[in-house]
Structure formats: structure tokens, C-alpha cells
Length: 101
Image 1 (cartoon, one colour):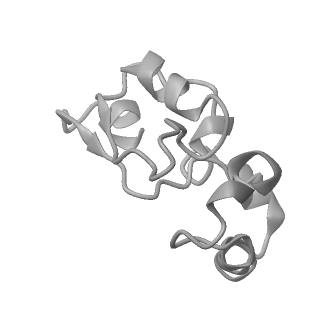
Image 2: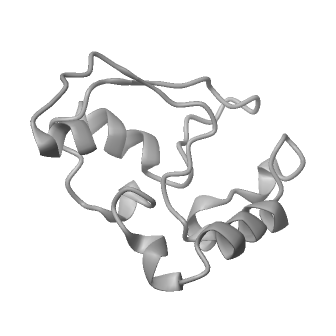
């Protein structure tokens, strides 16, 4: 998003591995994946320690799915979850990134 908004450099692709695309854990954490390298309480710990001011949690660079404008971003590549669901941190995440590309 920074490269797009600042006019460069032009990026050919994004590689997303365990992307955090929203800090809203009610939306962005799927309980079916608890224990597959991610734990909800760990994600909350990171938010509490790295983003102690809750107002920063919805900033576009921290929570891009809350940003709204994902147009003009390069294609995104990411591993498919073990359970075969194609979600990028919440319902609609993958679709939003696909639309943006």
C-alpha cells in the first residue's frame, strides 16, 4: 500500500505468509485454526504490546482490510491453509485481495 500510495517502487507481487489483514479478532481469527501455529491469545498479546493505543489498530497499514481501498495492489500469493479454506484472516479477506489485483 505504501508503494502504491507513494508512486513506487512498482511491486510485481506480494507474498503473504500468515498475513494479519485485520486486527479485529472477532472477524480475523478463525477458531478452527487454534493451535496451527497461531493462538488467539498470542495475537491479542501482540496487539496489546505492539499497538497499546487501540486507535492505531485500525490504521490502514496495520489493518488493511479495514482500509477500504485495496485497488492497484500487486497480485498476492499465499499458502493455502491446511484445512483447505481459502481465507486471508477472516471471511472475504482472500476475495478482497483478489479483487484488488
